[in-house]
Length: 256
Image 1 (cartoon, rainbow, N blue to C red):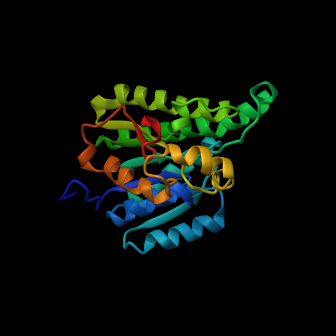
Image 2: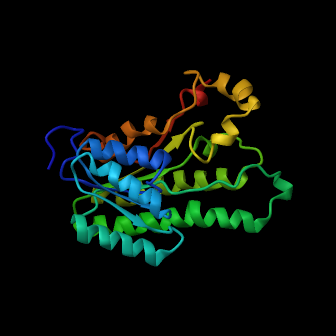
């Protein structure tokens, strides 16, 4: 199937939340490395644009309209992917959202639950469907969840988001132990401050530039493209012995 550690020809990768931001950058890198790629998203226009972009790499590319809070939609999308591509070798659970800053004592519990439905329930159901397919194939695979450095740092006013991302770290560690003997690896990626549609407004403030940016040793915000390499690595044979990890990519923010 592959000739070098980072050659993904013959592999099929699926990325939820893959029509923009970090998800699309990961999908783009996976396609450039030779993988056939299927992205999931709720916005049909962005899906179409993503599929067109990914097709330029020469492999198969597809985009499916999927709401990750809908178990039936997830199961259907996995089956459609298998029908079209033949298999699933890596699954990147990247779909997620944030509710922004709200003082903890003012946070409505329904707001908390709504975020968890996407960031935790949606990821769990997606990883379940992907894992079932990998087990059925019997050839192992790679499960990856996009968490956040909010999982390991205090994040005032964003407790729902932080809690959801910490949950993903625990889930992937548990999956690594449960399914390692089946050849299935599970890891989480923890992005630092990265410029995406979700963070653009917050990172453009004077407070962010004056207080947060100086704490990033590389002295810039992350870009979605900074996560392409880790996606290729985690999908590739190069990571065959790498599982149960929480991989921080934050320009050094966490160690400064």
